[in-house]
Amino acid sequence: MMQQDPLYRHRKVTIIGTGLVGMSYAYALCIKGLVREIGLVNRTAARAEGEAMDLSHGLPFTKPIDIRAGGYEMCKDAQIVVIAAGANQQEGETRLDLAKRNVKIVEEIVPRIVEQNPKAILLMVSNPVDILTHVAQQVSGLPPGQVISSGTVLDTMRFRHLLSDFYDVDPRNVHGYVIGEHGDSEVLVWSRVNIAGIPLMDYCKACGKSLEGKKAEIDEDVRNAAYHVIKRKQATYYAIGLAMVRITEAVLMNQNSVLTVGTLMQGEYGLQDVSLSLPCVVGAKGIEQVLTNTLADEEEEGLRKSARVLREGLTSVGY
Image 1 (cartoon, helix red, strand yellow):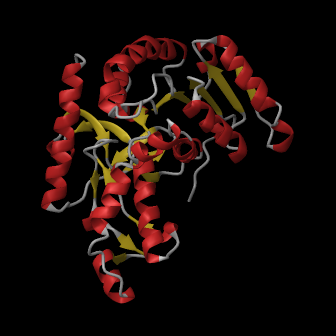
Image 2 (cartoon, rainbow, N blue to C red; image 1 turned 180 degrees about the vertical axis):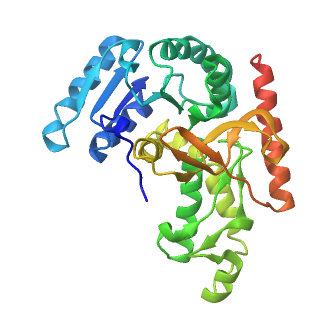
């Protein structure tokens, strides 16, 4: 049962970075009606002011929300501070290629956030999100559960959507996860997929649809979805904005939802000193618990490979 903590009755989110991702999230947040206050912070103050004005003009169509632009003082009293600042991924550029440019931005802004509000959940969305989440946790000194990322929440939803489309079943009844890096080395956990509690292979037999020839296609579509979108429209922002709203809901409403957010590994699957995504229980305090389960041999090896890729990326930027 959902538990409502009285400390969270006045729900406030502050967004650092008012680019396409940050504002797609803010727009979806307004429509959802989850918060009472939204703060917008941007390096160019006029941009944040303009975005606050534009959103505010639509408030007669939404639940009451106080939307304001300002400096880092906007982080005060926020339950969640979302970091969406940074350079965008360009066509042909991997998420890891972004690291050196965006690490410097995180190193600059995180101390300013913590100075204003050390109790806030830091929710990372800027790419490469796994590396930047690790840097933010190290720079902030906050507990790992308080610094989380959008991780593979969107990848997981893409996975479930493609399976639901193939089997012609409601995606809410499809259960499966993408773990590891939010990027090229991510791992689709096929061995744990079930539809309405029925293991995937058993469901295939029951409905007469074989995965032969389709599994590799789904894997490619999930793994390279962002590249396909970027090729056509230069950036991705709507879907990740909705994914961030889902994480926000889990925190603000203390739902203890299981989501594949990113966090610092502390021995899970023998992994240390790297941040990546696993199924986590997400509630008012951020990550309440990191969940592990038996993986197929190739999946566990894929997860270790993903961790190695990220560790190499961290080393390359001095972490």
